[in-house]
Image 1 (tube, rainbow, N blue to C red):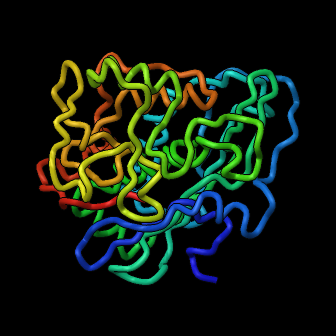
Image 2: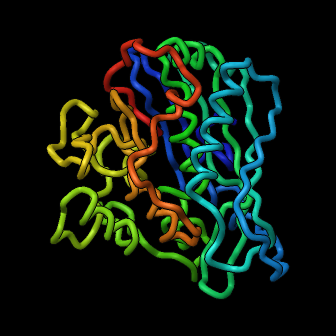
Length: 303
């Protein structure tokens, strides 16, 4: 079975010969092609406060790789601090696989939720577990560029639900959050929208624009930017002047990555208790002192 057909390959990363990050995000087809729905944890109705990402390494990472995963975990745990519903537990376990897939220039990896847990007071569906797999032949290149940490944080964001759990009906578990209709380009979650209006000066907006270019995996799962990441959007963050192009959950990797309050607030829309930034969070690469001063590869596409 190819990686595109795996039941948990929600977000596939491919590095073509042009050195762009690309891939597939087959949310509905992937989750329903093997199972009728994501497996669901039984609720206990005893919510433990807090939020905890557990990384389960199926292979021994290098010191720099482990640092990248730990930095991404730290970033998300600093902003996601609990649930708005009673759930079975406060953990999400992410299996991390570092292995040979197809060599340099092929598939970089995959990431996505593998089981779900449900909240019953406010009707949210959450990821209970997930998996991220990376091709070691390609991670070496990302590490050399100083951007492996950014890719890890981006993919971990998808495991947690950004772009993957916007619509419960899209993963065959209807009756929970419905914040996005495929191919509409309009994300309607109120918390992220409020930040889009204030943080990025889009006062009269009625939705947050979602990427529709880039094909399956990029389209319908990221914030919108110039196609291919090839130019500035002209939409900048209040107080910093950072262009939306460089926000970590856009579809193409920018030159000075940051996590916006809009992205953090999106997790409130899908049921998390969140802590917003006073200022943008530095890119994960900064936390682990990855190759400071090295130029970034341009126009690399996330999936």
